Length: 74
Image (spheres, rainbow, N blue to C red):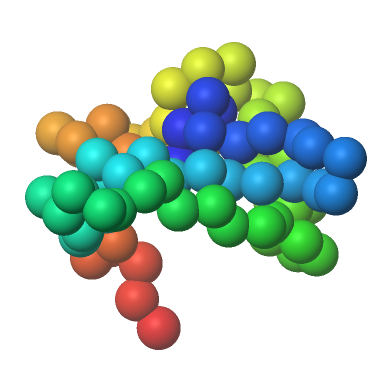
């Protein structure tokens, strides 16, 4: 999640995941994925955006520059 992908709109906070970051990026009909951020997710993202001006909202010192999905498990 990058700062540039998050926007506050009239109906709330939205994360727009670019088509290029999705599994369907190779499909002609694929589009960006819009995800509403509500409750605790919105609170966390807004707090992190105050600490990070640009780039990844959850940065890492690893090669990718961000916290990878395989790092976070339940």
